[in-house]
Image (cartoon, rainbow, N blue to C red):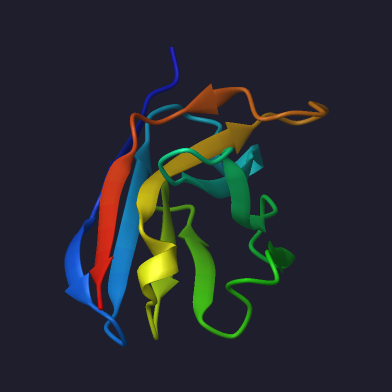
Length: 119
């Protein structure tokens, strides 16, 4: 059973920074693509950033390009989301998710961590 546990959320002022972490169980973490999603109240969940198994390929939603950075440490079974220049519209619950090799979707999800950006 794969478990993903997010941490690092909290309350921050606009313009501030946070780093989210997602610790994964499972011996094959280094083969998974990973993603960070977010869901704000009344809105659909959206993919914020993704990273391939090696960390060599990343992708970002237009709304966070240049401000957020996704990275991973396969030795620690952890994926990170570094968020800079935060805006009130970044307020949401942030989830990490894993996509197994060959899968066309994200297979496992964490429980989420709240990020609140005050103006």
